[in-house]
Amino acid sequence: MTFVLKGAVSALAVSCGLAVMNAAPAHAYTLMDMLRGDRQRTQSTIFMDQTPGRPVPRDAAGGSLGGVDPEAPLPKVSGPRYYTYKTETLQFVDTSKFADPVVTGAVADVSLGGDAGQEPVVQRRFLAQAKVRANADVAKALEAYYGDSRNPLIWVEGNQINERAKSAMATLADAASVGLDPADYALQTPDIDPANPDPAARDRALTQFELDLSAKVLAFIQDTVRGRIDPNKISGYHDFQRKVVNLAPVLKLIRMSPDVGAYIASRSPDSPQFEALKAELAKLRAADGSNEEQIVISLQGLLKPGDSSPEVANIVKAIQKHGSETLRTDHAATLAAYAGSSDYSPDIVALVEGFQKERGLKSDGVIGQATVRAMTGGDTNASKIDKLIVALEQVRWLPEDLGSRYVMINQPAYMAYYHNDGKEQLSMRVVVGGKNNQTYFFNDQIETVEFNPFWGVPQSIIINEMLPKLRSDPNYLDQLGYEVEVNGHAVASSSVDWYGSTDSVSVRQPPSSDNALGELKILFPNSHAIYMHDTPSKSFFKRDMRALSHGCVRLANPRAMAAAVLGTTVDDVAKQIASGQNHAVKVPQKIPVYVSYFTAWPNKDGVVEYFDDVYGRDAYVEKAFDATTKARGAQI
Image (cartoon, rainbow, N blue to C red; front, side):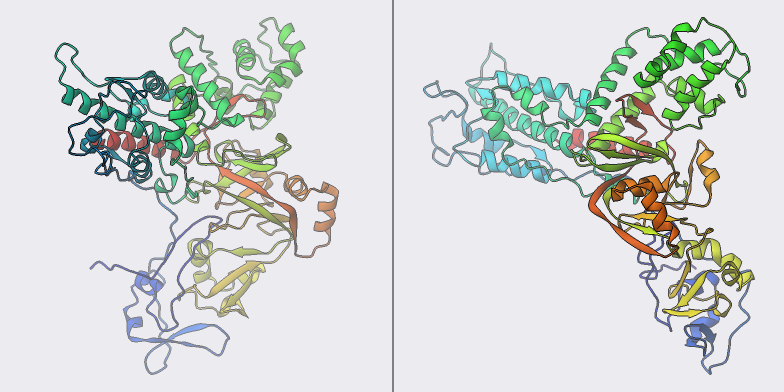
């Protein structure tokens, strides 16, 4: 028998282990009961024991049921999921009002495409016969412009397309340079036989071209400003307010522009990050057609300081190619003096340590596969290009101006960066959510720093991780010093019926040296309950792969980040912690925070770095690209 539960769980979201669930009334047959298969409970009512808040199962006569099967399957709380991407709906543009009402049905021709006094050729009434499909925003802009008979045609003059049209088409054909797909905006010029002119067929083709090109230009501008796909349709881990692109004035601006191609191209983002990614894309595409040397480091096992290996020469060569300008400057003497020795000497070790540090790797001078991958670029040119295209799309989801002061968390890099006055002033390693407890991709504003925090244990951790222990030992939380409440009443862990619903049960860990959040947490209130915080598990920061948390972002140097966002000193932060009291301090001014996911991203020197796709998200973005191009090609 299959049960379909509707309303039992309104939302399940795992981040920092968060699960949001509907609280079932005290007499309801709960999701726990269904999962446990406790049929007897369907005949019973749950009454409250003398212990405040403790739910005790009883039969209709008030007697205790007991005897719950300890082998019954445990409930689980699952997180968001990835979706099959659904493209936006394309609709027919309403062209019925495009014909000039003054001449509709008349014999006279009215040309709005040429200059005043030019022989009228294009019959505006043919606009009403054109068939164009577009999304709702593009359709609205087309209907507004061409529905006003005072607006001239943009791309057609006399009996041919004009230079403005050729300039626009050239820009659309170069869409790949900004990470878009030229196939989405491809358009054929009208097929007109000059040897056998048919005025009606010619004018019909020209007016169809007029509307088609306007639709393509509007779609390009919308795509390059906000992105061609809706990130919220990729997965439940993406959370963005999609940008609204004002297309209403675009066609008039294009008509008045002295350089249409330049105007269209100018609508792409111009942030330093976008420009760096765009330049890197151009460089790699150019390298694809060249015989650029690929550096290979064939290293078996680990290369440690004091060792010797013929691969040291390739290691130095790789750092010269992939290291930042700052690193090369700092170690210019070492690079200049290196003569090809196979000795892994102290000066080369220092060079490697500097490279490891700027790449967010453990800077111990020990060269393993993670360091080799970073030195050689890790990916092929083709895979780097794929990452760049995804990154250029994702930049469009964020505000065009990130701000002069902000925090950027890049999950694939396992790093957090604090920017002030437009410059990176602080960076540190972070631990992010594991693959089963992924950190979301969104942006928000930092509002508060809380010192000596309580940790409110999310329902997902209570259910998925604590419940098995509590069923075998109800004293488990008491022994650990956790505080338990049922319906707001403090109770002993041992007094709770851990075979019943946990909806009304809350668990928190008081401030202590063992508190899961450590000394402080930095809050930017969001529906995913994600925040930055300290941790007693410092050893995790020594690992190269740091997708290990329940979804929140653990900071390697939380005091420095707290001081940065509060605009104070680390010493002041230390005093706040030393008080031992739980208290919160608001930041003087809200600071944007970007909890991002970029497998290609420029560092502070503008050098694009590449990272492993720890959650496999790029593949879902690429599938959405393919679905979008296919839908547009089939429907327009």
